[in-house]
Image 1 (cartoon, rainbow, N blue to C red):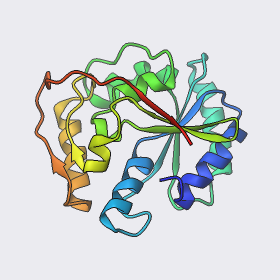
Image 2: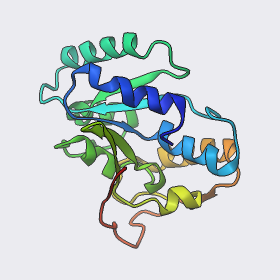
Image 3: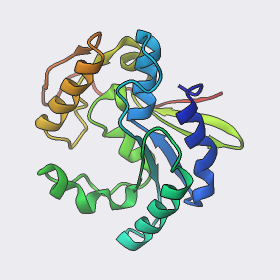
Image 4: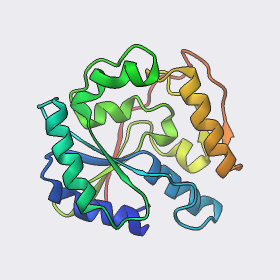
Length: 195
């Protein structure tokens, strides 16, 4: 993942946003891994890069200022970088997904914990010049090309199924497990890697 030029560019430039805690999350990371595992060219199926950050100010104006700085900072990349303050998610989630919002997050990693599927619950930041990986479910599903619903996710069934269908259309090697509310097995302990 870290060898991909878009991943590397986002990780290198993100500190210039001045946003405090930030993480490159989701699609760009796990889909880059899937491309490598399945022998596809870099960038295949990747629509955007998600950059999550934390700011105690949940106002739209504060988030918009960071989004505008990011638009300039990442303008030359192959995919758009979508920047979101995770302190604001509970304010817009219900309107976007038509379901109850999650409880307010306390950090960016709280958001990663409830991504729709464990395979996409990965995030990378840079601390002291070194990448730090956050993977609350480990990397087994990601590396095993398995998509399963996250029972802790507030995402509704339709969101999970639409995402899984799109992913499978690009990466047919994926094993997609059906929606199962209350999916048994519990949540493994978080996995953190520095390297």
